[in-house]
Image 1 (cartoon, rainbow, N blue to C red):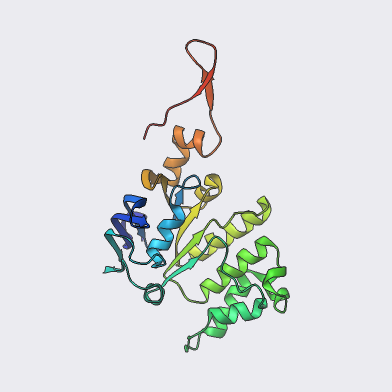
Image 2 (cartoon, rainbow, N blue to C red; image 1 turned 135 degrees about the vertical axis):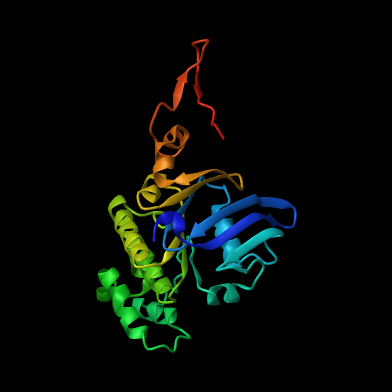
Length: 264
């Protein structure tokens, strides 16, 4: 199905998330995620990216205070996290959320908890085929894995929940470039197999290399959006997030440097 004809899976309309009922983390934020695509939310530390994912997942009690979150046409704002998860939204947090003292095999088995369908074994084989290194680490404790292997395990466990929407927070954080690329190649394969992905990332170059569509987020707001190609070609995105273009220029007075002002 052409991209422009794909159905909306997640629709967020003007949500406002507060901490301590007085500090705004998200300000009237709206976005849309379509089925079977990869959507990247980019931005600096403190922009509210993780808060966005936690709000969707129901992990922030009584949030959002305002606005609506629809998943598959059903309103899910302020639902308990287990209810949100039961609808098919699976969240892989920045710290990966592994049971570090358990083995790789035990962590994967927990991903199948509560499932009674006949596809459990085939799903297990599928995720081990996607991340073959985990098969050789099955008896190894999760805390002894490398950062990249832990990220693979976290994603593999999430896939065993058969998500309709996989939300991944900073998958490249702390990883060597080659390992980060391996993780991103796996996310691309997951998307091509039919799973919708909402990706939060600071490494804009890496995220835009696989995303269909992206949002730039600053100070709790969406300040720019577009296809991955459009964002990659945007001068401000190139300068602020991709490290391209002239970051500084001589002032008209000729005695100091200044940064180009954003156009959003």
